[in-house]
Length: 111
Image 1 (cartoon, rainbow, N blue to C red):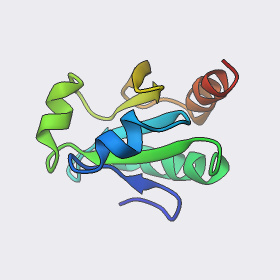
Image 2: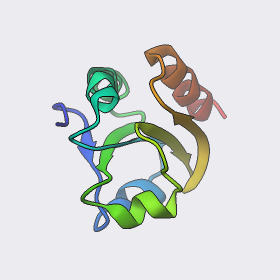
Image 3: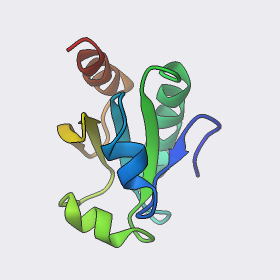
């Protein structure tokens, strides 16, 4: 369900792709059965394209990566977390606007 620029994060690549990333990383925690997650998908894909080369944008399927969902306290989806320097920088629960995510990524890029 990821777009051309949207990365797929899993338990096996999360540490390298997200925690060790030099750039900010926006991670969308989602599941196939979640209708709000499907509604958010085009926004995530747009952000991935717009920030390519400056920030990573990707998705974690919570059904396939339950330990990641548990580690980050995902109790409702979609939950989107912005990581910077291996730390949670901002957490969004539920549907949010593209502008909300862009503002958070921009702030992380400029700090």
